[in-house]
Length: 404
Image (cartoon, rainbow, N blue to C red; front, side, top):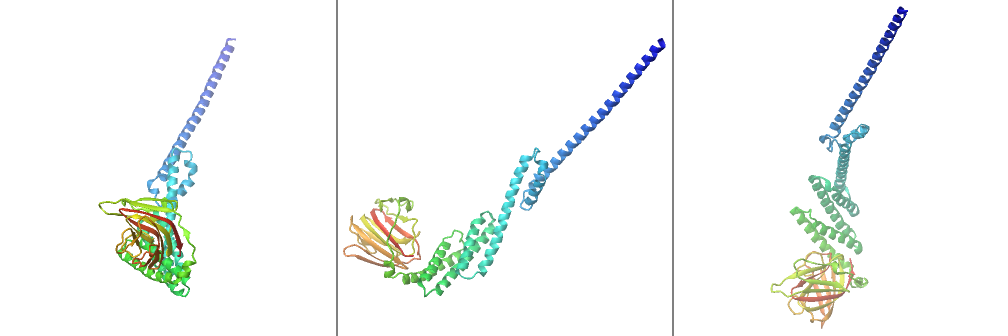
């Protein structure tokens, strides 16, 4: 009996030891698996961190943001998007991507400008005829507007191309006018365009070369002489009379006064009132009508001069000087070079400017006939006035026959 209990006790101990051993084995296995899993996770974490670090170093490198490398950088950013999309550097990489896109776009724009510049330079040398050269000129001007983001050297090349296109077009217009000499309307159209082109080019702020400036001043003068002859041929008395009068619609904002002139101006209800107080130091002010322009025209208005002196320019842009023959000087006091008006009375004035002549009539008693030669090359503009100190004047019922 005792031996049986001893045997059962020994079996229990053995079984316990087996269970303990089994638990130790299982625990060892579980621990080994857990340790291995933790090691694998740490290795994976480290690998991911190293990958992110490598991506950060590659995608956020400052030297990658250059015109030469920006395209490749964009490709790498797109190819690795899944790797950095959920990472800590997402915002920085997206900013880098935006900057790279801007660089690529700018580089493409510069390339397009360079290609168009080369095409314009080629076409300036090969295009024939006024119409073809006008198209080349327009492209060159448009290119100058597009090329604002280019380097200084390219800008200079573009401006040179613009001036070469202008020269070629100008020459073609004069040649076309010669071809159309027997058709005055066609010749006048070509010469008017040539005159405007030369005038605008001469006023271009980029025309800084003194020799080129002189050359364009000569072109303005050459076009002016030819335009004068064409206008005189086209606008005889019958042609002028066939053009209907138009009221010149203008409000106060349409009239511009130069600074420092001390003139008070009021426009409204179809009249322009000008007042410049008398001063111990005589001065003058310039007033010009904006938003209206003509090459040849007839002007009609009623003038009332209470006192003082006013010079009227029927066609002018920015040049105002009474010494030039295109001004009509009205005053309340008779003197050489000026026409006396009765103070305080409305007097009708009618002037026609065609080519280098200003002709007309002022309704004094007896009527005053006007026939003056224009001494400068202004062939486009609108009405302007020089108002002297001590002057009070009103112009009413301003009308125009725009002839060209």
